[in-house]
Length: 226
Image (tube, rainbow, N blue to C red; front, side, top):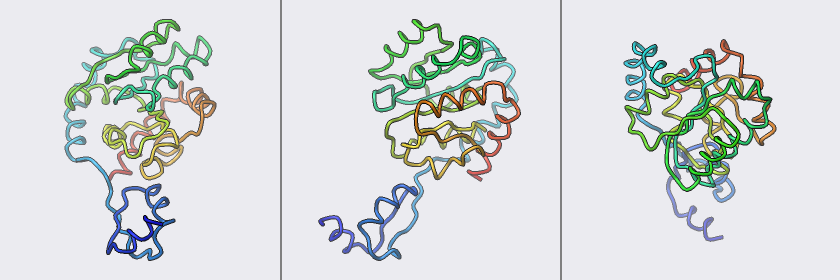
């Protein structure tokens, strides 16, 4: 009741994403009040950074990759229970031994779940590399040599890192609990939106050996931002 009265007094109501709009729709009768106000990043900055690093991609691969034939996933952000990055590790661990060996995951960030992630990866012999917080220049190098960005938050309103990663021609693997998932990701066009662990498992099985699709989806990530 209070929200309906509050929004009645507003001349304009800004929304950042489609899920944001769906929520507000229940409280606002006059739909003409809605105005889009996308929550984004400086795409030109990140795109220029990516283009400048492409000339050194071979050198960067030698610097960061243990095996160039692996599917390289990357996650960057806080390592908390809500972000549930551990869930990604648990799904990878459900793959066959042969399939697990084909996946490598970069984890970039700090937080209370980091030790649990490191312990789980070690106990289950998962291919993984951990880094602490990186500035944009350092993070850009990892993005440039990765194949997919993967985020598994149980809830996340608008993680800007998705937008950043797309500038590096990275397709996105994203849980449907991410607020901006439907705005930035078109399923099977520039990545995948999934509902649960079984969905994510099937995605990993599908993309492990599909190199052509990775490139196609990565180019489409940039097209969406354009």
